[in-house]
Length: 164
Image (cartoon, rainbow, N blue to C red; front, side, top):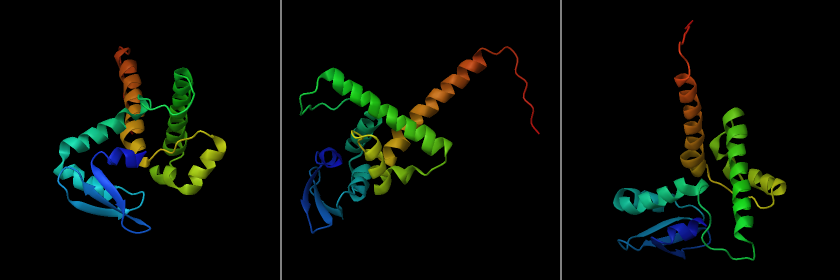
């Protein structure tokens, strides 16, 4: 999925077994990175092609609200919406219960053993990156909590605050 996203801006080819060569379609410069890692390509896009980078980031932020555009199997739209809803609930639960309440680090979702465990628990689980948690899921939860606090404070006539 990530390679599809980045292939809009880079032509990828294998440099060797573990390295990928990417040629920028916009300025025709070559960059190399490890297979499955896109940090060097991000470092190129962010300062040089700011608008294209913002396009990628905004599509990541809309992760929780969008469906995949391409449907490759016989499932109905209702089935896909149900699967996407369950997937989002699963990601929200991981974020709230494991990362926020238990204090586990964000990068736990990128460990292969954790991903294998989640696939054993939830067969249709699609892995989420710590970047998506940091930029999409956690801000969503933070905004929900701030909204609840704001409503509660607006409904209170008098507030007493004691500081020790």
